[in-house]
Length: 107
Image (cartoon, rainbow, N blue to C red; front, side, top):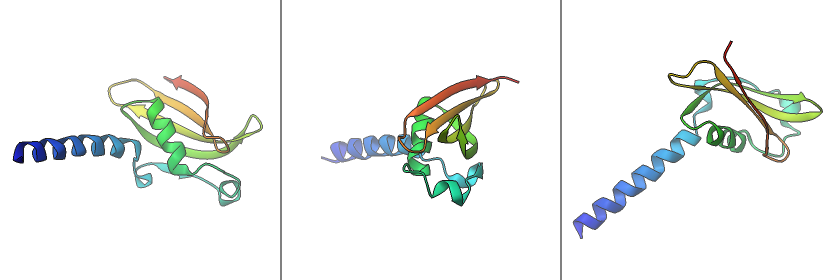
C-alpha cells in the first residue's frame, strides 16, 4: 500500500511540475498590457500565456505586449529557449485564444 501511495504522489508531482512550466509567473518578464486594450480581450493573459508556452516547449517568456496588429488584438510573447540562439515571438489572438503567428528571430 505504501508503494502505491508513493507512486501516486510521484505521478502527481510530475504532472504538477508540467503545469508550473505553463504557468510562468508574470513577475519574471516585462509586461506592456494597457488597461484600455485589456478591457477588450476575451482571453485572459494567463490562458494566452499557456497557449504560447505550449507552442515553444521549454521556453521562458522574456516579454509580453498586448497590442493591435494587423487589425487584430493580440498578445505578443517573446519566448527564449535555453541554449538556443534568438527568441521566438508567438502571437495569440486575444479574442479567440488561437495562435496568429510564430516567428523565430535570431538577430
